Length: 125
Image (cartoon, rainbow, N blue to C red):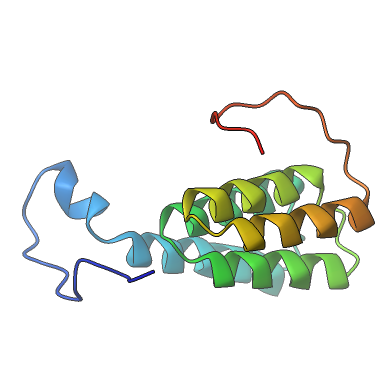
């Protein structure tokens, strides 16, 4: 499952490639913004939680995504919803972790999201 690419961060000046090469920085910035909101007593909305999950999935940080979802759900945050579960299932599927996708489907069943077969991304289970 390697985190490929190496740590190096590379030289600054390129075009869009520099930003794309550093997903961890973007991920950390996204979480910092949400933490600032919490500090200011601004609860994250479903769109914010789901955006964080998408950024985690794109960065290959599924563990962080699941932790974020679990923390939101445990806090009784209505922001952790069926869309959140779907994002995580897709993330596990993209990573080739079928067992993880199935676990998230089980969480989704317990959580009670509507399974609306619609959405994008191909390859249904």
